[in-house]
Image (spheres, rainbow, N blue to C red):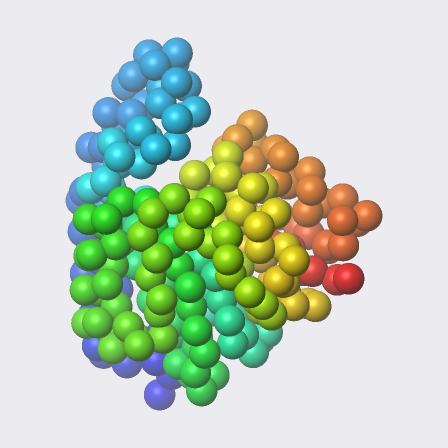
Length: 219
């Protein structure tokens, strides 16, 4: 049986998605109720924003999680890098793909220490912690020394950092590396990233699927 369908994982994911729905709704309502200028200032300061959202899951959708798993298996990924662990929902999907491929390493970065601690506990519950290296701190620093070949990248932290994070990882990308970026609907914040990966001269084939940008690195 594939790891995603083992009871220890399905039960945990069901629990996390239920808790996310309960927890995130009032926090998101509070954010949207802010005056536009105040909300814009908060969104522009990623450290303050993610500090204010330290109790929010902001998780990947279940369908997108399965897509991540599928892409990692199709690519036969052995080294995966994730920007934005949160409570580890997307990390579980990615680590499950590594487990079913026979092993590998997932390097993931989380800015908020309390979130990282809960993500670690969730990965231990799922039986996947041995595949994951969880780095705590600003991803501009924690992911700066990752060496390739990197087979898959998942971006779901501060949107304005997508391009700077990719710039750090790009030298280590394997040929045919897959890069998935979430929340592409936040157009202004991700514009520098999407303009880069959508430019064929930069060595990518890229397309938007719902709120995901899925890119293939072709040197």
